[in-house]
Length: 285
Image 1 (cartoon, one colour):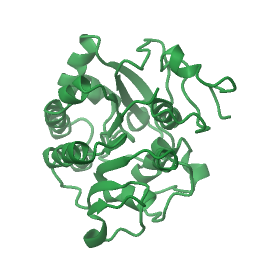
Image 2 (spheres, rainbow, N blue to C red):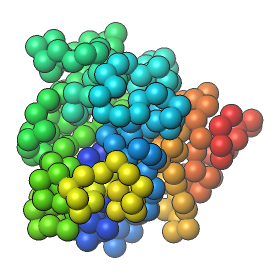
Image 3 (cartoon, helix red, strand yellow):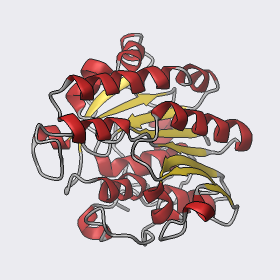
């Protein structure tokens, strides 16, 4: 079975702040419509390397995207490339680093800001290059892409939480209130996506520390949320997903049977995981 998937990457959102401040999404969890898992991000706990990890299932040390200034196309199989090989449609409302990883690099705002190109891995894109770009605008961009192009896979990536963390640090009202505001903006659209039957994953690339930064191995830098919403997930409390498994989970949901990516054993329903006789559920094929 093939499902449409929305992946939301809330840049810089630490697990404990998600649990405390994502009021709407936490309400869905209390209602049994969403499940929250704690995930440890890979190292270094930096944005561009972990965008690549989330979308490819490959750690930074292997991908070669080891810091934010590595400006080049990904050389790994990603959700975007595998979806395109299978004839599925893709879209992203995201920071321009995603365009550089999966479309053209370096980013050219005139050429790439609004992308409509069926030959690209991300066919339909609304990319921004200012970290101050409001989350409300970003979610509106994403909803426009969803309605206009009906993609099989949609990536949504707001930046304001990370910006607040760099400005004020983990233990600040600014950081917490920005998370609350982003949750409110998300609540404008998420009910309609759920009603339409999308399988939704909400996660972060990394967390934040009290030094107003990230990149190291502190728990507050590495512990991030993963909310899953949809009827293809098991919603089992004891499941322990890894950040490197998110790519494979999305590929499973999209029906990409030969994706060769690792998948957390208990995250999806059993029938989702038994469609291929020779699949190895944990680890790589």
